[in-house]
Length: 316
Ligand SMILES: [Zn+2]
Image (cartoon, rainbow, N blue to C red; front, side):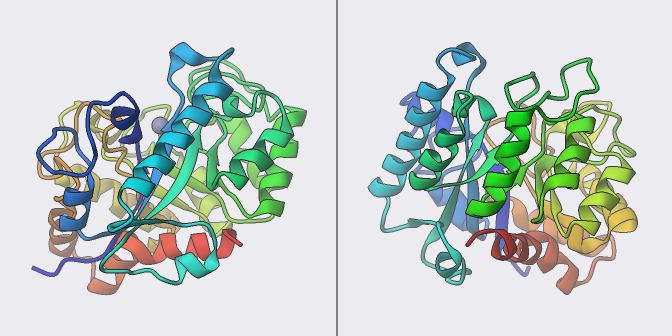
């Protein structure tokens, strides 16, 4: 069975690391993702999310964000034999590196900025190259999908988009409400990502993207990283590889194969699909896509080429 390279748009594994639960080095410590299993699954780049847990918001969110970034850096420093931090085009050009896994740091939650645009430059200096504007709630930049509002970005949120474009940071709209999504697309001069979302037409969950949103991502040359969370994949809540294939096939139909990536959400989800239980299992998805009629070129696009193109277009 051919094993394609993998770029994955979102994992939450640093949460277990900062709490001292796992080293993220060995495959037998539980969870979904670690270096041993990522490499076994064919991974060449993981976008690692620093997810700011709800109990730190809003007052302590900046501090927690910095702690998470620092932890991720410590993880990278401890594992220099096996990983390297992606900061620039030159780093991206080293992919695929069969020996070292690239790590691109993302903060999930604009609360990290503490309402200061300065903080965006500070986290950039610390090596962060992507920012998820919101989680499910409202913050000083925008509203998340959990709010019953129809608000666009705040003035600060709009300034953040402009500054992220200038710095060459990837704008992540997963969790953002729909009005905010359209506002980002009006403003951004660069492609954007929904790093871990699925298709609303296949599973009606507010975290998923409508066909209009998927088409807009295609026009923007951005992409959606298909999420492996069972509840975003099917209303029934128990998912298999076939459900993931259904979402991919639907997005391919409405927005084109070039708009699809993977965004497992490993270690951020409590239910993964049967056949995709951890980071070793990506080849099973490739096989399921082959059976569904996708050719090798399309599979390599979905598995890593689209994400690499996006990052080369955004990161300076
Ligand atoms: Zn998330």
